[in-house]
Image (tube, rainbow, N blue to C red; front, side, top):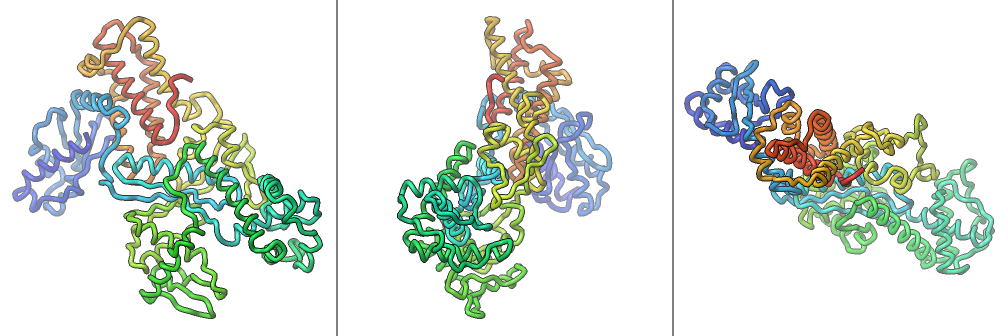
Length: 585
């Protein structure tokens, strides 16, 4: 309906061009929006206010001319000038009847569009280091990224979902040495656990599996492991200690032995992450390995491109990228003095590789602490000849878990965290997905565990799912009375839906396509969440105000067509959010 009204306005403005208007305005200048209050009509536009100055016309007079030039349309009951020059549109019952028919005709496709025009978009999200289980913060990134990808697909983008695995570098070495120390403990060696190691209980099963795989082949005496190592924290430097311990492990068990520990630890953690996300309904089209990226030559290729562009310089034995020339706060090392390539070199190579695979838009879903990352990766893309605006970065703010009034502490290295799996087990996947999406990703989220588990109308996901289940219950009651639903008669009788509650449901129901598009354009899944709450509220109000299974068949079928339309839209919306739509509760 929104698009049709905008076309009517464009037709009116075309008629006025050359007389009232000096030139035809761009289509982008013409927009209609839903009104907030029913007495102001169904839709409104401020186009007269926007065009008044270039047309050298009084806004109200211009608005009146636009209204007078509007082509007749059976969907518009009347258009009127309001306020300083707004135009309000009041729709006919036929407009809503037609939209209700569209809901029934399109079914699961209602709300989909071609706004994206098939543009190829890559959404990279979660991408947590495989050094431990996913925690509740990763869960918010997963819920957001998966839902955004669903919404973008629904409006016509060609979307790929990708997880980047940081399986190279120091953090993986720390995981490997943490597993090895636990393995030595299991073999009977007594040695302190490094302060900067991964201390979570999840490391012990890795060590146990390593022992099953190799027996005591990688066992070394504790005295040999600890001999002449620098002091660990708190007396010494925990960073220097862990690096020395990694070096000692490599020396004692050899490169192959260390790689065996690392490979087992990595594979087990990745399998756990894949399983966790899969159970959460989050599936990726591609898992991209940093180590594989390096082996493919992609990093060398990116550095060659930068060198050809004259963007690299050697200083103090290291190779630097002149990132400050492209908006970054400082230049960045891409190859260290020892010849090792940095994480930054891998990151810009990965983003170049995305572009070379044909993706027009790159959307990175990142943690809240990645502000600086975005500027430097964008700088790398620009320096390699790519448009800077091809990269979008969405920073997901932190999650705080509350049990009652108690805030649950979280810190991954110290093993003080609640895993995503633990959260899902406690509150369920549906509540997990929904609660993660209730607030804008730009705002910190306080996750109320008790509310998420409540089976009351105070729990928003329960409240919305209950609307879907209530309609299913109505249809069961209909069948139990030996009655059948006649869709054709229901749609033909949509003009009977004249009560305030019915009109409120119709107005809210038909906003669904606009809300999906808005959520896509603004990268804001939470707007769809809020919309579904409004729709559920309108439905429950109607449910409490009227009987659906009445004796009059035309009225009964009209009301059932309306509530079945609500059920369909609720189901469509919940599906985009990754939440189930139960038939009973």
